[in-house]
Amino acid sequence: MTKPWHVLIAVAASISIVTCRTAKPSASGEPSETGMPDATGSDDAGSAGTSASGSDASSSGASEGGPATPPGCESAAVIGRAVQVSEGPSLLPAAAGFECAVHAVWLQGSELVHRASSDGGAEWSSEHSLASGLQNYGVRPGIAANGDVLVAIWAADTIDDAPQLWTAHSENEGESWSTPEELGKGRSPAVLINQAGSRYALWTDNGIQCREYDSAWSPAQTVLDLPDGWNNLDAVVAGTAIHVALWTLTPDGTRQVRYMRSSQGCENWTDAIPLAEPLEIPGPGQYIGEPHPAIAASEQRVAVVWSDVPHGDAPEMEAKYVYVRTSSNGGQSFEDAVRLDPSPGTAVTIGSKDVAVAGSTIRVLTSAGQFATAPDGTWSAVNPNQAGDVLATGNDWTGVVGLDGATLQFMRIE
Image (cartoon, rainbow, N blue to C red; front, side, top):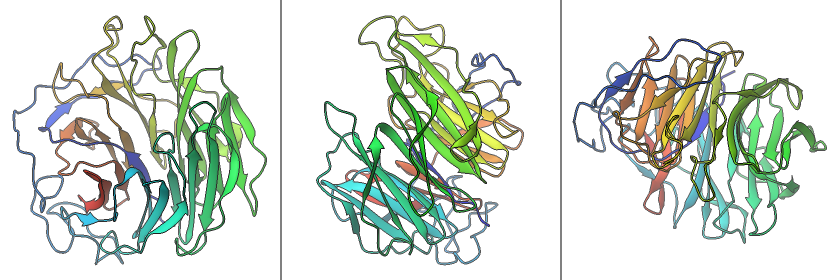
């Protein structure tokens, strides 16, 4: 069975190609001191009609030397050509894919809207409203896909209280949806469908909560106790395993980034292991990096991304960077953290970021551009030719579902 695509939330910008060598394995969690070499100086932002590697797009959808169009996706969107998805002002997009299908949800006004494409983003279905009366903060929508089955999750946020989490599902690729039902109160929701078709919902509420769907949602289980504070997670499935990245800010002002996994749904979780040394905030009002980690996994490869200040520069806490740690053994151990920046001393500014794993390639999309690993483990910063908020990556091709101003678009970039 083809695995579902991994979904990334990110904002991309044009940057020059540079490389960085990854560090040797370490269990210390300390970031590598090696930075990325100086950028080449190119300011070319690229244009529609070119692939991510800069080669001309072809009508067949395959760039020279790049991956071929997946079987059955011959009518997929042309590389580098944007396809409009939304009909009105849009916010907070999220996407999922399965084989040739692409599914997007986003906030349009006060409605949560879904559209689907069955041909790789070339043509899209009519809009379907999943919920209405939503605010434009804290909604954090998500969607998962596996064949005909879709599951969406979102939060009906309030200013003072933890938001109420809601979910709905479709058994016919989004043509119709179930009546939304409550999952509980909490933040940072994620919804997953594994290779076997099992469905899971996770969120934070003074701990990581997990529920499984089997004709009905099971009672919530606390799989990790957390102290009061600011807690956010991201989760992904690979095969039947669940992988979770966790960002916490404790009441005493300490930031932590951790990883944990389960081999059996809401049961059998590993301990939460640190991926970065705890970092203390020096005082009230200091910023300590965007509080949403990102994680992706494919078979034995796992990648976790977070934003932070440079270690050793805690007093200023002004420059923000994106760090990534990768595993080649299913999360049992991780390589040293690598800082992704286009050139030494150039910060990745505040903005969304995320990561995808597809075979031997790991892609990270940040506010400073797109980064990718080569087979030898080196990292390169490449021009993605598209500013986007969601990067959905399959084993054979890559697309961005993102915002162009207030309009949601899809663009196939590889």
